[in-house]
Length: 118
Image (cartoon, rainbow, N blue to C red):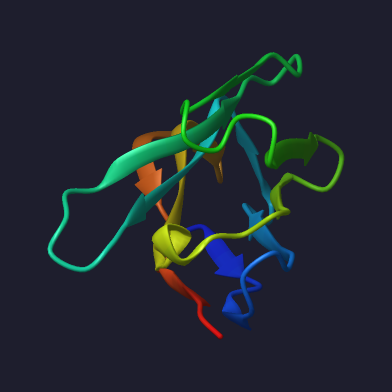
């Protein structure tokens, strides 16, 4: 089982991008976005529970917004006010996914590159 991530790209500083993560045909619990910059460790960016509770890394609070649509099994990350230091590969994660009657834990999507540069 793998989540499907999309929406990365190249944007100028101050610009916006929206990332989307889909878990088609499944039910996911907490969903999160992580990122890994060049030469850095993967870090948690934002988390949203199935009931809509959210948590953000301090570096993105006030600029990024995570949301989800349980009916579509998607979790989006709206990124505004992007900075060069936001440049990274972004990964989506689901703590638990129920798919085909089976339970899977710690499920990841493929990374999507976000580059913030003038």
